[in-house]
Image 1 (cartoon, rainbow, N blue to C red):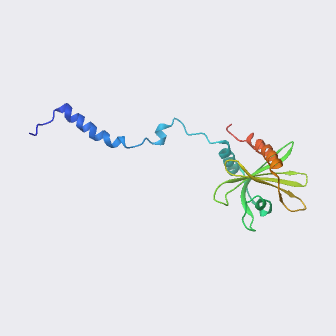
Image 2 (cartoon, helix red, strand yellow):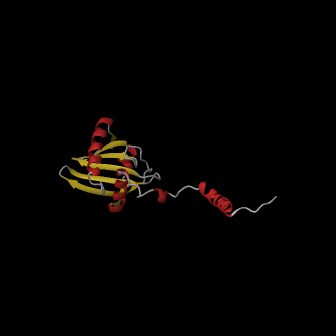
Image 3 (cartoon, rainbow, N blue to C red):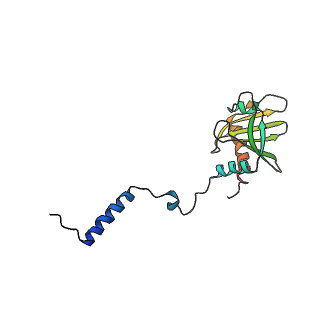
Length: 161
């Protein structure tokens, strides 16, 4: 009843037994990709600020108007500033809520203009802060236009475009 298996048949059974567990495995990511994915522009901007920026502390007044609240304590940020003929542009990154948030700001005469964005650079709010006054939320039309100008300034300076 138990006839011995022929050599070719034994090899086929052995190959099937060895290959079956491998069929359930997935290929590692590094084998399937020829090169690592390129980081998006928002991620590259955040990396640039974290790499080249200086550690600073933000007063919470203007940021709390936009919804970024740290109580009455100052907000720690990494900050990078650059000048051009239109003035000084500043970008900051904070992680106080456990995720990266980007703050763009610049001075227009005696008025500071702030924009808060998430890590995908979607604007969450804008505020103005007069030198001798209190911060106020900007309306969406003016806020969006100024935000786009500040965002364009920094997008031109991101390495690896």
